[in-house]
Length: 110
Length: 115
Image (cartoon, rainbow over all chains, first blue to last red; front, side):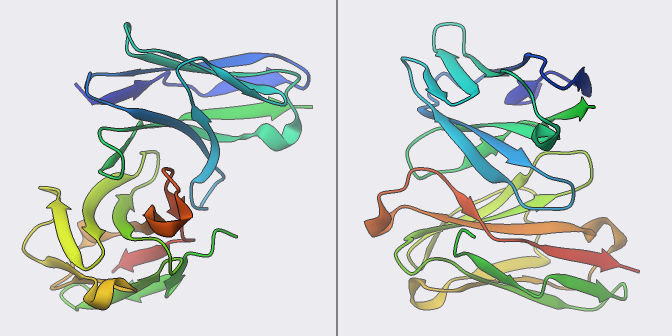
C-alpha cells in the first residue's frame, strides 16, 4: 500500500462545476500537508498548504482530518485553467522527506 | 519562478554513459531534495541534504546514483552507467533556512532520456 493515496481520476468536469479531490495518508506521524498542481511536463507548483482548521484561498478550500488521516481539496467554479494534475503531499517532520501521492488529473471542459 | 534552477533542462544519453545534473536552490534554502518522476506517477524521493550533509537516501538511489552538495549551496546528481529505466524527470526542490519556508519549491527539472 502506498503511503499517500489519491482518487485515481481522471476527472472530466464542465466549466463552472465544483470538484473535490480526496487523499489519505498512512503515516500518523505526518505533520504538514500540502496540495501541489502540476501541468503537463512541468514541475509541481505549490497550490496551498493545508492547516488543521481548514483553509480557503479564493475558489480553493482544503480540509484536514488527522483522526481519519484524510485530506481534501475542493475547487469551486472551475476554470479551463484549472486543468492539471493535483498532487497531495505530506511531510513527516518539518523539513524531512516530502511524500507525494500519485496525483489526480483534472480536465475542465468548455 | 521559484528561484530554483536546474541544468540542463533536457539530456539525451546513450545507455552506459554517465550523466550529471545540477541544481541551484535559493541561497537561503538550507534543505535540498532530489526527486524522480516518471509519466503518470507522482515524484519519488531520492535524497535530501541539510546544508552540505546528506541526511536521507531512498532505496531507489542505487549505487549508480550519487549526489553531493559541497558547501551547502548547489547540488549535483550523477548517474553512472545509465540504463533505459533511468529515463525520467529529475526534480530538485529547496526549502527552509532563513526563508522560513516549510513548503518545497521545485526547479523546472531535468528530463533524461536514455537511448
